[in-house]
Image 1 (cartoon, rainbow, N blue to C red):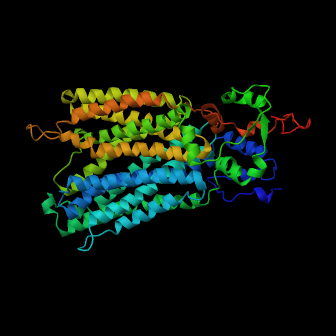
Image 2 (cartoon, rainbow, N blue to C red; image 1 turned 180 degrees about the horizontal axis):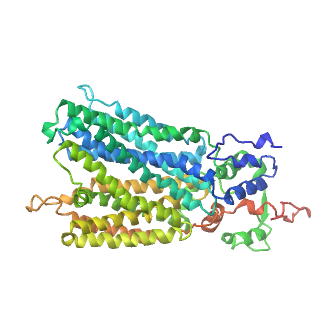
Image 3 (spheres, rainbow, N blue to C red; image 1 turned 60 degrees about the vertical axis):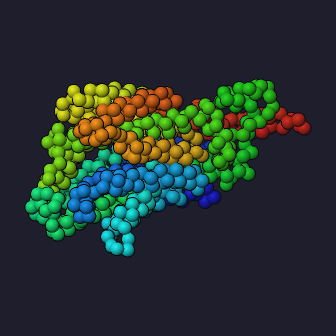
Length: 570
């Protein structure tokens, strides 16, 4: 019979409430051990697939929106700028989402460690759904500026997208079976590829549906009222449909149970402090379990607490202020930053790549929009999609760190080839290198930089640290888009050279970032096939209370020969 005192709320077909399975166990350490053991030893099955679908829907929506706005900008430019949208406006609409994403990653990541995962999981999806709809209602008038309103909506939407990064990562990590945790987290993140493909297909269907209104416009100037109306409706349909995947997964997010690790490690530590915080073990027992206390004599009668310190800003600074712990955060945040700087770099070559495969832009409105959708779909399916899934199938056997190291290494070589031999490469040669780069970005650091921060930090700071790491990556993307990206035309006009004359040098700069990513990867730990508690114990010197759930310890009292008992270790 379950004890109502230990019953927790929530639970559905995607996220089982493991804590309630052992609510009848009075001993909190034994209850913790049994619950985590059931999670860690679970076999891969339909429950894990449902978790992947529910957690992955946010990344599908995220990548759908980013890909949709890139195609949508081409459509709306015919409506408001006759296909001559200022470069600053296009950059603003693209970067605005990234700005909001940084805010969401840090904000939601921190809040999830303060109030818990359950209380806010789903809120980020609601923000994405509402903003997707509101963007479609944006119009032009004398009272408001169309670009300003759309930018505002995209910043707020970015906050929701950003919140999904730490929340979906750590929740998936904390519910996943140990053996396939990397694959499950990777599959969640791989939904980005499906989001891009979905946006491309929707754009293609829209263009085909409005073909009659578009085909007659041989140039942007010939895009009359019917053509402009069609373009205006297309981008709104394209962006608005991004709300549909979120609606499908919203119920499951709002009804999840609290993460079992958070319940057992953080909430229990606070709510049951009077009961749990008195559980001590002698330092001689702890010496066998945790080398970090090796400075204490085995004969010492000092006692040490099993529970980790209470989470606080002061403790966060104290913990990560120590190099052996702080270097891990530097490794995860730094490597994500380096990756995202260069991740954007590949998009600078997209126009040339599309030309190589016969889908370059056309003056005809219909052909231009059609080629853009089809060409990008081909590139995604050729490089990104296989890379994501090769990572998923190998990350728990090869390991996170080897995949990330090799990915950064091969990308350094490829960017050097593109940069130093750019003028000697044919279009098809550049196409081949582009696809290989896309493959090794995803079968490499793009997937692993998402997985590792969700595993390698203690429960009380797992979400915060993941949010900081993800935000570092997005800041790298913003810098690349606003600063490095503009260098491609550096002094080209002044020196009488063709446009994009500095692109080879920019690719060389990106190669340097990939090289730095190799060294930063050396700071991160390998986490494959280890429980989250083992990771925290090994790399953060934190004691796993479950290991003391069955230890009987004799404590010599100075006043009397009394004994303090803890259950024996299993």
